[in-house]
Length: 121
Image (cartoon, rainbow, N blue to C red; front, side, top):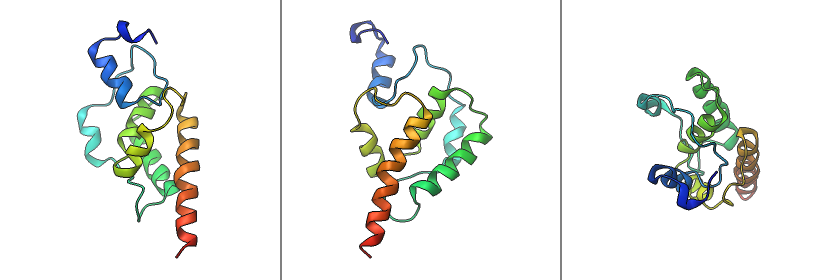
């Protein structure tokens, strides 16, 4: 990616929103706006485990026919809400290069966290 001064205003917004992701410029097109209507959400609080969310998200994303890594990652990030979204934004900038790395860091944090929280009950 070019230096910050060479980015357009929209590219700068995307860098902030998806900072931990290594994204190509130009980005591949996202699905139509309706895709968010039935997207599963993960907040990091009680209820859905990280593993359950990934399974649900994969099924959901498969129905959207997403084939580009950058689109897959951006849609996944949009499925995070609350504490999970806050956690994502605090990750090291440009530290996640592909969907496998995103899945790995997500499961390492939220999967272990859920296990530890369960042990306390």
